[in-house]
Image (cartoon, rainbow, N blue to C red; front, side, top):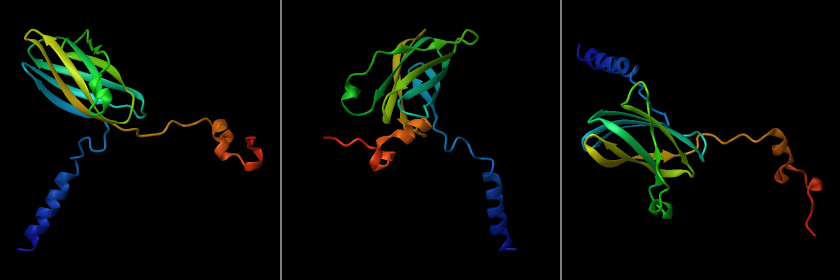
Length: 161
């Protein structure tokens, strides 16, 4: 009886763990942000290649949000001191608490998306960290791959004078 109980507990834990796969391995970022009186549920879908466009969705709750502006900024380096101008997110016509937008991530590394929120309770800001890593390399056309100088036999390469 004492041997069966640990075996039963192990079997039970394995059976219960099978459906718990969540979003492991996903490149997307899901974050709940408390920005003063505003509560935001943020989803950032990072691009497969860098540079690329990240898609951002925000659902707000709490105080009514009238506009959200977003800015991509590297976490470190000189570029982090000079962010680009912000882009306005578009409010859904069907659901005024749902906003969508997109941003370019220009280099791999650690970024943050800065949110400037304006609504019935005033202005505030917050940010969400975003890892930007390419998941695939863009394919080169077959002709380009075959005619690349590093793939050509030595007799076909032009020699420099």
